[in-house]
Image (cartoon, rainbow, N blue to C red; front, side):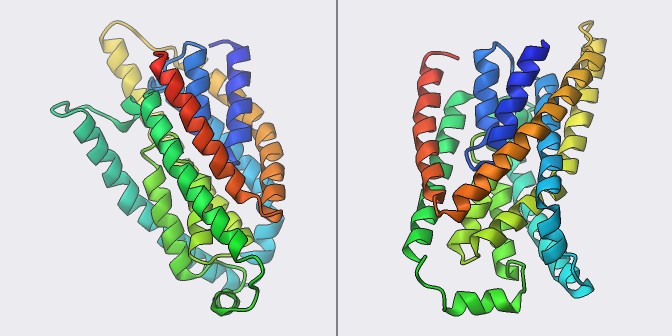
Amino acid sequence: MSLLKVLILAIVQGLAELLPVSSSAHVVVAEKLMGLDPSSPEMTLVLVMLHTGTMFAVIVYFWNQWKRSYFATGDAFKRFAIRAIWATLLTAVIGYPLQKLIAKLAFPGAPKAQIEDLFGRLDLVAYALFAVGLLILWAGMKERSEEKVTTNAYDKSVTRSGDNVTFSQAGWIGGVQGLSLPFRGFSRSGSTISAGLLVGAARERAERFSFALAVILTPAVVGREALRLVKASHEAAAAGTPIDLHAGLVAALLGMVFAFFAGLAGLKWLSSWLEHGRWYLFGIYCLVASGVVLYLHHLRY
């Protein structure tokens, strides 16, 4: 894969990953338009490394906020850790079996079927974008309708949990994150922040907690894709069609660096839009994007 293609994918990933519009959907479409196979082990590793680049962008961007909110005292860290563990556990309990179930239903009788084999299906990407668009639009409109209400039971629950989301809110965010794992197009950040807004979390807390969960989740996903690539490499070598792991790794690392800088720009934009109550506009964008992606599917991309 050429350096130009890596740069394009990194910019698309970096800008879209940290916006609630599904970076995976945008990267899959970009890959299709450039003649690449999104379901191949090499490309899924590149995508995961792009996620790693944006993960570091998240850490840099949110670090000061996390220090004030989660690491200011031992008690604050304990509250955050309990919520993060609970949310991540729900993500695993929901996401992993769902991935296995979808792969089994999509490829009946295929013992080696993997969820990644569906990542190149633009029709599925379009439906996922449509679903998350509706979710974001719902959360955004609900938030706008409640903007003038500043003293209610929701405020009391936030006070009890300090700068954290509540335990219940963390559970909803983690559960929805699990639902996002199998579907390219069902934005992780869009769905989790929307879930937080719908169950009463302040948008700053929902955003901060959502991206903290992303940092926890990304290393596990990177490790899974690395193992998948090694396994595919061994199988390809046995079949006489070896995979050039060195070239793929170099491309992935370059993409990670490019995605880091693009991710910082995307985060600044996201925070600005959140502060001005424009969350619902991301939902409208996803709905329009789903139509565009479905049209590309009909064009046989």
